[in-house]
Length: 207
Image (cartoon, rainbow, N blue to C red; front, top):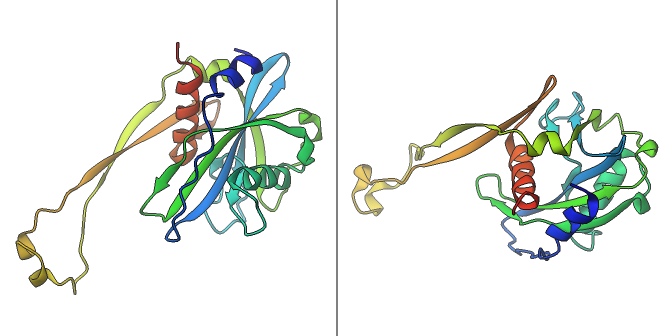
């Protein structure tokens, strides 16, 4: 697998935006890095000082600010800020399919891009505890663990059951969500990061 083949697989994907004022938009970048003549994916470990998800493994990215022209611009800007690299070293950025997280009120726009000069990476310690890189071929040749999370509807104590058919016996729909876990050395990649990673790997691995 090389950069040219990856970019060719992504050519058919065009950025599609879902505009909905109920949701906040986020741009996320999967950074590809050439290291020792082998493509790697760069991951971040979030700073332990952060309020949200300290110590979690993630990709660079964040909220689409009003000054950002698009989710892609947000992903590139956040990657530059978090990794301490110039904007021009983030190239060949291609979109993947967006996802809507209804419970969290978020729309996630993932992208793939090439970091052309990884020697310039100086991660921002206020946001990033550390970075690590995983060979792409390694990830393409392993199967993640899969576990399920069951979601159940629990109405609040003042819910107006008298207004709906069936009242307290209403048959609420429940759902399961699959969670994937990738392991590399002492690192465990899961949650949204693993979901985005899996979608990317499946896309470029299509025959």
